[in-house]
Length: 214
Image (cartoon, rainbow, N blue to C red; front, side):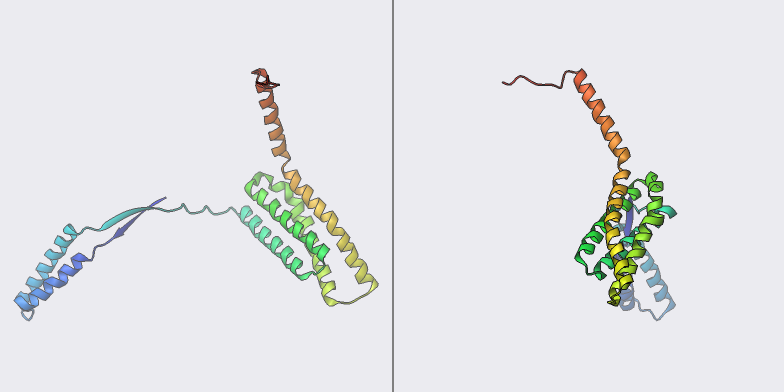
């Protein structure tokens, strides 16, 4: 997008000041006649200055403003930031190295899922259950683990609950991977079809097969 900028010259103003200085010494400004002469000459000087020193006009190329997101896209971006931020916070809080490694992977895949759908809005419905249940439930369970772990208390129920959550993370990690992979199903089918057509056309033109060595 092109933007026109206009920079006014200061020289016409300097000329007006010069006129009043000269008038003060030449005719004086104590009389009405002298004052009116100075005013008339200053107007003439200003117009002359504008003619001699015109405004400087420049045209700059600036990036077009980013279009505003529709409400659903804005909501996806907000949910992405919230979910990824919460997973990162939990990862920082939980000291278990095995859980931390799984959380790092889950956080990365979660971000990739949102990024893909933001780039391909027609895929929004494909992650509805992921957004409405799988992701928030995973975060809820991890928060419960974080609270129990931070208490430092020991007990059969606490230990069993933490073990169940720890074991669940492997299933969640695998499920999130499959959710991301499923988003690429159409892309895979398109690639396969393109390759099939390409191979058939090259075969019809005699461009495939072995070539005599030289």
